[in-house]
Image (cartoon, rainbow, N blue to C red; front, side, top):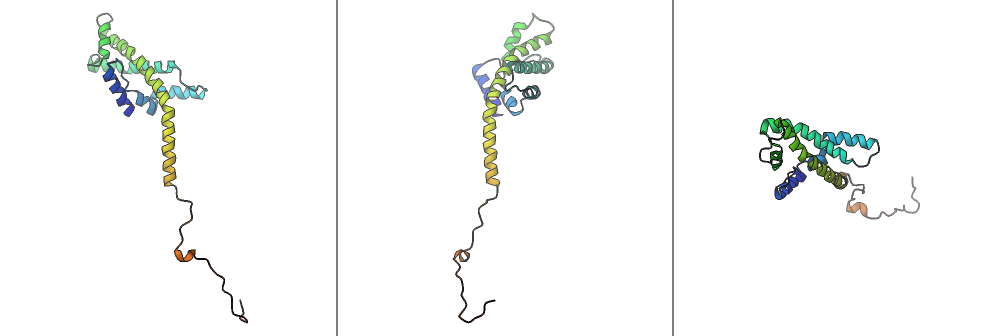
Length: 169
């Protein structure tokens, strides 16, 4: 959530027609497309996801977002991406195609940058999580040191010798 909020603040400060609200999602769950495709690629031995994966995520996000943006908001409803929509308005019909192309033109670079940032953040996040987990395990583990003894039991014991002529059993 913090990464998403930072991303939103960056967009508001810069006015870029991106979203940057996906970085945290990509780090936390790698989303569905990121997650399934990345897992498939890793099983085949790829160490890092190709740029095409991030672009595929952008395409999938646009396919999902277009009906919502078109039906609910009649476009972009105040987002800076609406400025791009003005470029397509009146030139491309039907209107939902305009919404799709506008979303696609912002979603592709957004998901590409979000994916690259997430891939860079994941190893750091895993190290932090590992340290926290190990610290918590050490704190919760019972101590292996022997229990403290009472003062009386810490005095050295001396052997008692019987008097001469006494029988020892």
